[in-house]
Image 1: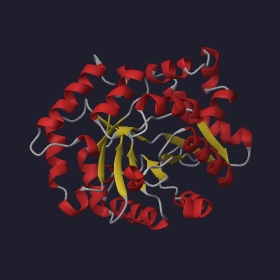
Image 2: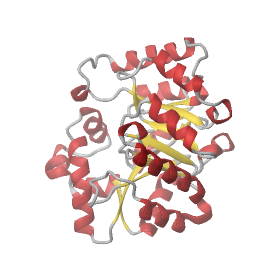
Image 3: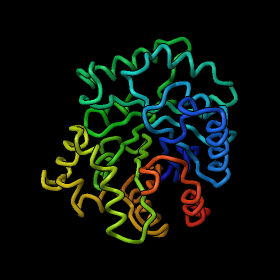
Image 4: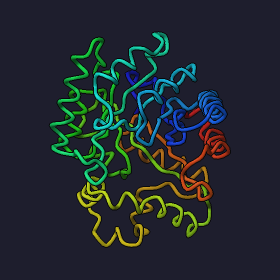
Length: 296
């Protein structure tokens, strides 16, 4: 349901944790820059920098691209002060800065020693971004919102929400909570493998870690899943609801389901068995671009 307000995102983007230039050498950084430029040439409207990126990672990806929207998915508010983030964004070339969107999240208690009152912490962080000189304005930020309170905050204090590891049912509920104007850009993990058992094994290898994090499991329980669905890395029912498993046409169908449920944009994360979710899956990105064609 992409509105004119959110057309710069496109209907489909790519989410990847392998695009951190600060975590590699010069050769690796060059490969990342070339991959990012190919993604925009393929037609993907937004490149989501996953895996808790730093402000420097985000700035480097903006500067490496020419036309694509670049968004963090998601920068942890516990890892970087609002003042430092605002200063680094301000230093990006003015012509490119308008293509950058700051995705923010509260991360997870088991991963953050100082984790406390996440909702209040996010409100304070947004206040600090507003007060920075220059500020990071609401129209240039999105929140990693899952529950009702954070979704309400995303609608009121940001451009919208970027939920991770969610179902189409959550997307429909999030659209209702956000209202019609806010951006809704869920992430959808993709396994391009036509062998169902092998595809689910690849998905479970990734999902197991997330099923140890209460923010995700509590959200899934709210959506009607049971504790038993979390056993062994995820039941078939859970995997089929959270992932797009199969060929590129299947991915296209699943993406349409999220768009039909109320998403403006879907951020596709390609997961491969060979890389364990890492690396630059160039062949898979090209395959997806080919099947989506003009729908990107």
